[in-house]
Image 1 (cartoon, helix red, strand yellow):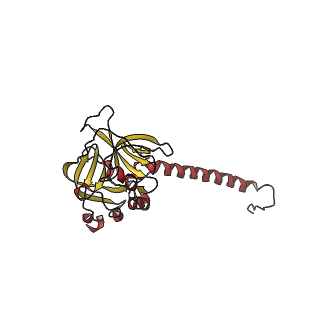
Image 2: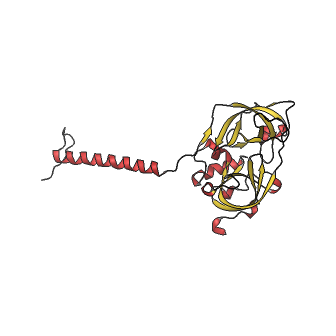
Length: 255
């Protein structure tokens, strides 16, 4: 007769107890193995930063086209035409900073912002009400340079999440969030497939005709998809842009 466990007994039969102990050990090992497999199977997180709750003070010239940005001269440079770095500017939440900065276009300001950074590409989430004019600052050249036509494969993301607010901030899992961010005015970013470098960069802001900002919903159906775009490569300071015609974009399965 086989062992039979009765719930009100203080101890299970010895054979059944041995079986249960082995089963618990094997199930534990299986759970640990599955957890390690899932962890090791994931790609590494990007080296990105969002200094949430730690605003810093920045000074520079505001430009509002194609997207709100702060142009900052390199330390020690003060002459017109000297090199500068660019910080994209966004508002808190899923909103662009256009309404905060429209009256400061071409002006030098001091503002507070929370740094968002990924692989040297930087953005500031502006603290509303922190923007002050600075009189008598040096002018900074903001002219675009045309680097010629290119064809490149990659993915459209929203710059705020991708640069550090979300990790990962790309792929199908991030599609809905990215679509809402772009609709709110966050600048669209194109990242090349497998990090392929093009003219020394793998991240490009997307702009439309004449280097102007794209309509906020013009890219909605192409977000988080692998696509190939034909574009004009532009540069301003260290920032690089892809000038595209959104009406010419096609899904891969419709080519």
